[in-house]
Length: 176
Image (cartoon, rainbow, N blue to C red; front, top):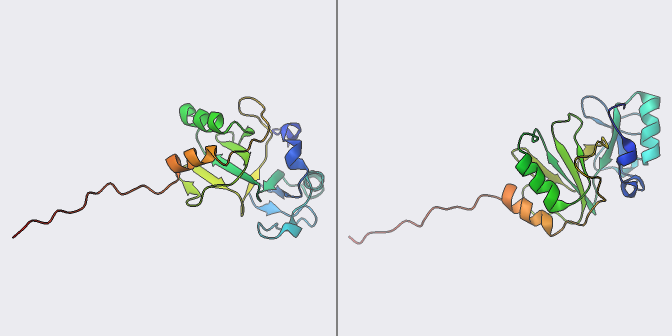
């Protein structure tokens, strides 16, 4: 856990019992038993303190946050070369942002509702349930509190995840 700075993780998140541990293969682990955690079974999650303690007890690699409303996460993999795109997301959302475990991606945690539709396209993913983020506490940019982003996420979702609209023109029928 030496590459992580858990002090930077917002205390707002630490108050929830949405914490799991993880292993190098990114499998979520139950902080109570050391077995596998399930994204659809809150009894396999724990407090931040329980997850942190379980890392030492069971030799797990770190802690992760399971998403449930009102929180959602934006995951951008292998994106740091495209600083314009990264900054567009970080600046538009204005919420807590950290480097991913690999150091080649960004996680942004927000409050609010995700628009309906796609959850993944290319290197951009958005989830509010059924997933967890490995938390690093390695801040990208400025340390920001978790922001309410129900409206601003619509802009990014529409631009990067919404289904492409057909641009085909209707066929013309010639008179015979």
